[in-house]
Length: 459
Image 1 (cartoon, rainbow, N blue to C red):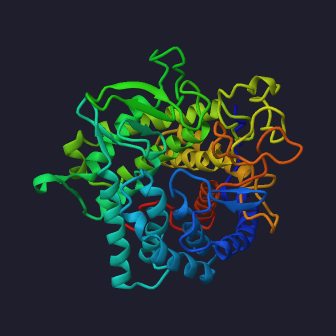
Image 2: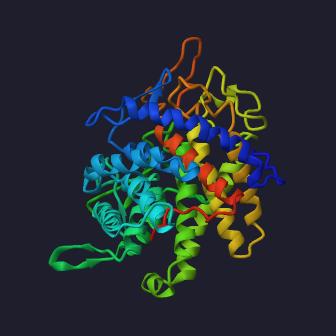
């Protein structure tokens, strides 16, 4: 269980965050210099160098979004130039990519961050440039929403790249695309010019995910523990009925892959923050504010509680809470995560995402006047302090990764195992590095009394 430091405040983390931005700069420049336009996107490191091995090009927005965040945090305009130019010249195909569920990852991290900076007055206002970003964001939300499968209960979900039968837990975090597109006044046009609400599809997907990917300790199966998350939910496409849980990157359908858990934590928490900004008139056709917020809050609370209770004391999880050799690591939940062991690896990328979920849930609850908000807020700062510091923060200028000890796909054996080790360790991932930068920027803005960071700040 995480040992929550109740005395931490955002300014306490600033020494480590300053170091993070200092080392981050050289890593972004190194990756940019090595990238060949049109080549496969960097995904994770092997021996400290970013390489590509993926199912889809789902990490390219994190590459260029990282440069944009670097500018946001430091004001160094060479990173704005990289982020802006690479977005303009290399990201267009992601807007209309009909084969993936990752639009929020790729396009909100790039076009969305650039629009936010313009709205905040951080970059000069240009009407045509602003329209360009807004058009990209309108389109990406509609394209993602078109990947639609219906369920037997008249709901539905955005299906994963596995096909129409497959709902991934990851997609809750990628609902960012539908959020900003809706906020910009866009809809998905269907047959006979039917206008399909992006907010409606967002809420249906969030509800389906909450009902089938997250468990609540109500006896749904023999392994129904409150807050446990299934990476994939499988549906019968003939009649829309749920068939079974599954896992692509976790150990099993009945254990919790911790990065999938983290996507749930962060995705629901930030949607709660976004829904709170919408007028009641937007929400009334879908059941009203109280019902919608209750639907989103239930999985947010359950998943965050599970993370706190099933993670080592320092806030860094092992890659799956049911990994088969965990029992061989003595007292693994009652001491800091053991990076170097002979049995199961940790996953720092899950921590970087989960910390944001804890902070955002705490922020939302505190804004609602709930005393419970402090617990999640302090847990988020506790996790952030660990993951944004050594030995997780990479200060080696020759290592292109920013956050060490990330795991990509343990079952497939894609992660690098260094000489002398029995498990993967010492490597980084593009999603882990991006979300660590996003987390650091969020805390930095709090420490400096600057505007609270949200994905929807530009709309």
